[in-house]
Image 1 (cartoon, rainbow, N blue to C red):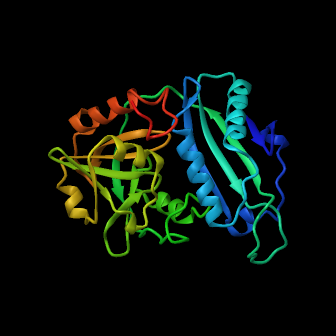
Image 2 (spheres, one colour):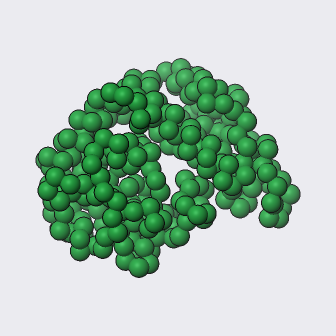
Length: 279
């Protein structure tokens, strides 16, 4: 596999990262994941903007511009010589002495991971409530950071390893999936958990909220069980139809709401740089 590491495309076995990197020592790092469609990185500008804002929130200075990072993605695309790529753009704080630092990180380690990804397709999965409550955000709001232990432990608790896990807050409110945002529908109206639950404001979540009438709501699990339809979103799978929640059956791919959402992605994935572009 080829990676882009601090300005150069290299093979994975040739990458060297310092053991004193504070991303490794203290989890000080931010990442974005997305994929390409016919070579186009869907919602790339939204991902870069969030990356920049998140890095600024924890004092990391990104040494590359939006255009330089786009060139890096295009270079990786050519190096892999494949149809399309899964991309993880990772910014780690960089090496510094052991100890908690309050100074800015001016020399971060930037790595772009890439691997071939199959053609997009309609998908349905089971959703399963995990026993572990969602951790509270590391800052005033949830960052897409290196702090992933809560997610990993929750994944290990799933009875069905193919299911997506559903996090509740310690108060019992619906929060988010292990790697996704949650949406549900009553009649014609869509809902999603409020960000005050500590859910990540996912880029695909934001895209869908631009396209549909969606209301943010604090909701308990019984309210989700009463929904006509449930789906979850992330930047690699787009929208996934929920086939069941803790054994209760839902429409899955046959749901009219999912089919409409799927159409929205059909119209956008090969062209849109930002969720706010005019159609």
